[in-house]
Image (cartoon, rainbow, N blue to C red; front, side, top):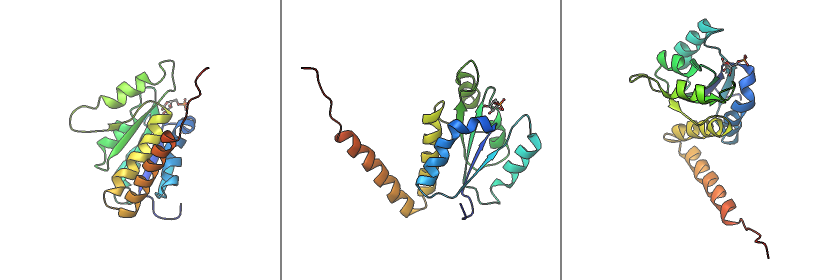
Length: 165
Ligand code: RP5
């Protein structure tokens, strides 16, 4: 995207992108300027601090952070900025994302992370929710979101089921 990014999509590993692309695709569908980066809480902690500390001054309005395992990335980013952080638990270990969900959702009072569902649904919803947050001050984006919801409604209304004779 050429425009200055309004949403930062970050993840702890390039391996998380298989899930996190759902957020990126949603932002692209709505024409929301965004950036995508790997930022690891335990492998690149200095980058994590720099990313969070410069997020607001670079114009980011929402950060979507996906991580697997102990999943401290969303919480640590949230600790260093007041830009809203949406956390996506990635099913990266034998615990299938329950570890990440509990880690991300259990932020102590004072440093919130808006936590989405584990995996693809959570990633897509994070993209949608970021767009909805931006739409609170963007009427054109709000109209796009309303049209998108109407299209989903019409898809369901057009569905038919074939019953056995
Ligand atoms: C976390 O550890 C990442 O978010 C990823 O989900 C998990 C495993 O990372 P890799 O070993 O696949 O790079 O930091």
